[in-house]
Image 1 (cartoon, rainbow, N blue to C red):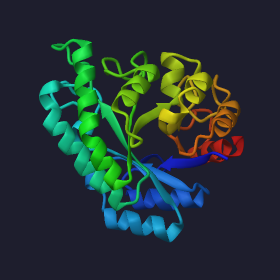
Image 2: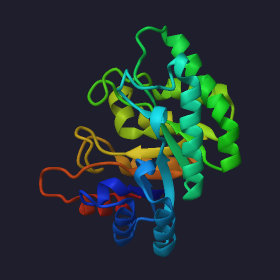
Image 3: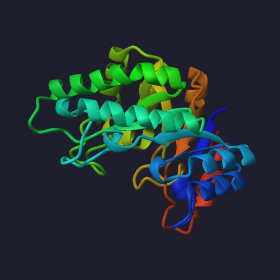
Image 4: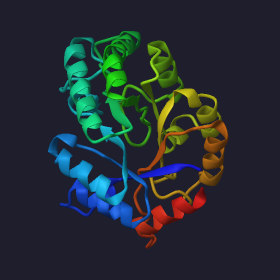
Length: 265
């Protein structure tokens, strides 16, 4: 069966902490959480709350250059001049992820750097990932790079194709450097979700789900998630599936969306 994770920041109310999100996830019957902005979190309290409620930490978003999506004025892993900063930001984020017992560290690679050829940016990213791989292996945390759609949500982002992401992680050649396959983003970018997932399951370190259009709960849009989950099971995927979606505007609550998703597996 698929193991699900909730996003602590989404299930928590405005102004609440990661700890509050862990408590809410546990109340909803979710076995794991992921969270953003570890620098603002009390990591000891996060680990304590996870232990208290029997909730695993599925993933943590990296800091600094490891979480850049669209800021061309900030360091990015695809900018050759930012290599040292990107490596340092990812490595200190790995330390934080290991401290809370996280399964993976989520890395966004940054916007396309217009002054460099695409191949140059890709090689810069591959070099950063190769340099952080030993730290990831030592920490027991998998670095996962996330392709995002540039059509609807993130115009200008460098990495949009899961196929290119898989090529990049294969070139690095570490079991601790893989891809976060966000099925919502990839449905928009390239479709063929089940085949792309199952055909590259050895390179998938984490999965995100939401329906399209609207990034709403599975079952509210065009994607047959019961089939996606069955395919993941059949392919031997053993990571987490993060529920990173928002409630529809038809009166369905986020809690109902989460419970409905759990029932699809």
